[in-house]
Amino acid sequence: MEWKDETTYSRDNKERIPSVWGIRFKGFRVAVVNKHRLAPNKWVMHCFALGIDTLDLGVESIQPKEIAQDKAIKHVKTKLHSMVNQINQYLHSQKLKSLQNEQTANE
Figure: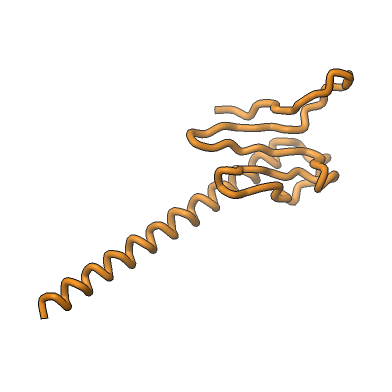
């Protein structure tokens, strides 16, 4: 896996400066965008599969893309950990309910 330039260029645009970098994982894609219309002086990220749309990474547009990419991956990792924790909490609560039901049935 590696980051790839996903910038869409106008035919008339002679200056080909990449502004969108994406990386694909199994089941989802992460993109970092420099100078997005909603944040013209910042890097933002998208990961639509995780419900992340135009998140300001707190990285100025003059900073290298690698800084934005690193922050984006860390944000995705944090989001995934949070999702897994929610699932584990649900499973734990279901297990407790099941044990309580067994105790009630045995009384």
